[in-house]
Structure formats: C-alpha cells, structure tokens
Length: 424
Image (tube, rainbow, N blue to C red):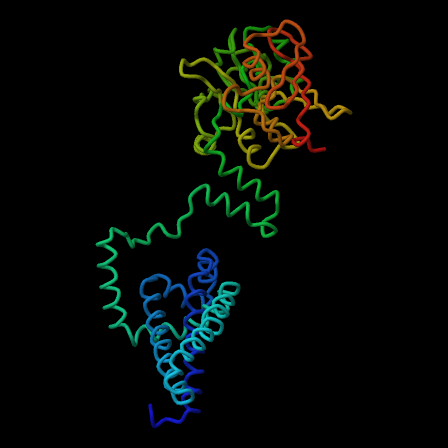
C-alpha cells in the first residue's frame, strides 16, 4: 500500500464509502419492505419482489452477508484513510483520519443511504437483491460459519429464532391495519371489514328481536283471522306457534301461503304443511358461527332459546348481515323496527325496545352494552325498579327522561347526549 499513490488511495477510499452506503441502504431497505405488499408483488410476477422474497426467507443469512460486506469495506476504508492521513499530517494524521472518516461514514454511508432506503424501500431493496444474491452464494461458507456461531450463542441465551409466526397478524393487529389504511380503502369498506372482525365478539342475543316484539301467527286463532293477518303482513317469514310463543311449531314463508289460499278447501292442516320446521339456536352463539350455520343449513331465520329452552327472540340472516353492511332499505325478516326521532333541541325520542348496539352504532354513542341488551333493560337496571311514572336519570353523562310506560315496559325515552358525543 505504501507504493500506491495517494490519489489512487483516495479514489479507492471513495469507492469503499459508496460500497458501505450500498450495504447500509440494502439492510434498511430489505428489512423495511412491507411483507404483505411483497407477497402481492411476488404473486403478480415482479422479479425484484421474487428475488427479495428469497433473501428474506432466510433473514439470518441476509443480515450476515450485508454485515460481512459492510464491516469489510469499513475496516478497509479505515486502514486506507489512516495511511493517507499519515502521509499528509504525519503521526497526527491518525486522530485526524479517525475524526474525518467517522463523520464521512455517518453522513454518506449510514444516515443518508438508510434514510433514503427507509422512505423508498422497494426502489433500494429490489435492485440490491440482484447483487446480494450472487454475493451470498460466493461467500456462503463464511455466512454458514457465522450463522452457526451466532445461532449457538442465541440458543445459549434462550432466544428462539423460529420465524413461523413473524408474518402472522392477530385480530387486533389486522384491525389496526384496516384503520390505518386511510384513503387506500373507502371509509364504508373499512367499517365493513371492522364489523366482520367484531362478529366473533357479538352473540345472537345482542342482535335478536326480543320475545315481546316477535310478530307471528297463533294457529289456535280463527282461520279467517289468520288469513287476513297474513294478507296484511309486512314480513316474508312468520313464526307459527300454538297458544304461546314458547310453543313455536313452524316458520311460514308467505310465498308458500299461495298454495293454501288457492286450494279448494283452505284449512289449518294445509297451512301447517306449508310451514318449515323451526330452527332453534342458542342465545350465546357468536354471530360469525351463526352466519356459517345459516349458510350450512340453508336457513334465514332462527328461534333464539336460552339454556332452559325458553324462547328469547328471533334472529335472521339479515340481522347478522346488517351488522356488517349496515341497515338495509327494506326489511325481509319477521321482526318489527324501532324508531329514533331527533328533536329540535338536540335530544332524541327513542323506542325503549331498541337494542343498545343498534343505538350506539346509529348515533355513535357509547352507552354500556355489557349488561342489558335494550334501552328499556338498561334504564330498568339503573333504576332497579320498573318506574310507574315519568322519571329522569343520568347515565355516563347521558340525560335520560322516561316518557312513556306501558305493560311494565318503558316504551319511549328522551335522551340528551353529552355535547362532545353529539354529532348532527
């Protein structure tokens, strides 16, 4: 090296700094790649993504080859810089070379290339993979030996290097990905995806129409009254029961009723033949499970029962789908709707039978849903009694005024939300 000219050494030093910057940017770029976007590009045949993906399959080897190259060029650069500095400044050149080279490497071989790679990982990593792959094959014996030593050390320290779960997302992590997608996914689609993730947390009794609101046919009634009721019904499917709603004996689809009406002698036996056997579902079934059951059994409506077999309500496939896509414009279920009427002062007149989940979702409120499922149940629980006259109370800063009571139930309540929760 003493016989080499100073100019040649400076040129070689510049080349080594460039190589150091290449290895530094390659490391940051490869490790900053979005693994899911990488899989997508690989699936679409992007050659750079395919090459980078092969390297990332063995991250330990990738890091080893990058660090071998980076350390080699940095140490060689330090030696050359020392020789050049001694030639120019004598013995003082060692300290000067150390200071100058440290600054140069930090700026041109570390911070700048790594920052560029962090902001544009694909533009850096994909081209770099074409250089790193053959370099890995050439230096594989050294990489293998280094990985053997480091792997042994890591095992002694109790550190696992299994990568099987590295690219798997938990449910909450996937929720964060969807929420952070921003303009990449329309807001409505984001809400639908989040709702799908939430199906596991919601059970059938959270979305069912309660027993008190079930609209059905009592087979013990007069046939003419039953037919007239069916003709005026707004629903396509109606439960048929005998005497009491706990004794549901079938589900009638109104399209099957035409055979009864057009028969020569309409009777209850024909009506029962047009019914389908009821499908009973436990009240604690998660919605995602129940949706699959509806699909498997080719059913659209189920009778919700508790652990004692008592009928608690009716749940339909449409009720579950509404949890995902929002309210439908038309109602095809055997259930009745609930009303929310906004008042001029910012308060709302609300039907007491509305479910708290539906109320919170519609008005973006945060009424507690851990206990009772309906507004009537929530107010009754807070009062610890069924009110006999209009009464007011405050719950989580929501001002609630009971307006109408009928049949031991709160039929209507007026709620004024806190100012920060109210959205016009």
